[in-house]
Amino acid sequence: MTPSQLNEYKQNGFVKLKEVFSKEECDEVVQHMEDLHLGNKHLEGFFQQDKYGARTFNQHLYDPVVLELLIHPRLHTSLYKCFDDEPEGIQSMHFYEGSEHPLHQDQYYLPDCMSAWMAMVDVDENNGALIVQPGSNRGKLVTKNDVPMVMQPDETYEQQQHNRYFPAVQEVFKENDTDLVHVYVNAGDVVLFDGKLIHGGAQIKKPGTRRHALACHYIPYGSENWERDWPRFSFDGTKRIHYRK
Ligand SMILES: O=C(O)CCC(=O)C(=O)O
Image (tube, rainbow, N blue to C red):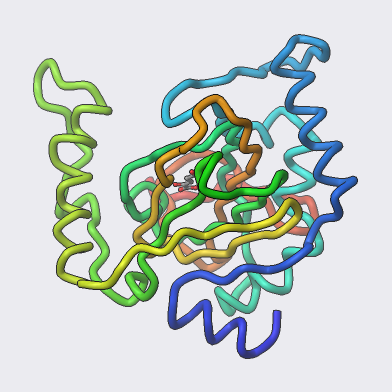
């Protein structure tokens, strides 16, 4: 990552890193994910959700293929520069399809985090790109103090999100008063983005089209603002459980 890319990340809240993975490496990941999906390969713990597109959650906890990508050495220096601290991998989501996820900020869910979003296929308007509001990383962050992650009686988590969280982000989006940008990338490119960046999944023009992308989330080693008992993975392969009780 060049100094000007780091500056772009700090100003806009995101930056594209081109060709981090080769086409062959991406094809292998796609094949692996499709084999799991079709049942051609068995992996203990494999489970696909349908919330915001077909996807898996924290697959790195049971799949060495995903763990290797989460803490891939080609990502380390860039993540280190963004945080100015050692990055620790804490969460992963593999998307088989675009998500059409409403605008949100990842630090609402994962305080102090940033993301490395790895495209395993070309991503365009047909299969559902990322949409981002450049510069919103320097604006307000909606936190759980603003919108408690508490469900009313008979309310689901999804309803809490739609009733209170997403509207709160929309307010900040309007206050920021800048346009959304679609982030089109090629297989092997990685988008680094700040956990305060307002972003979501664009509308999918060709529903049913595959859009393999792995979204990995990181927090700085020094973060004491971590509330979950999930392991924090260092890039040397070690892990620790360290969270605020
Ligand atoms: O991949 C997408 O469509 C959305 C990803 C996203 O919102 C995230 O990683 O937080």
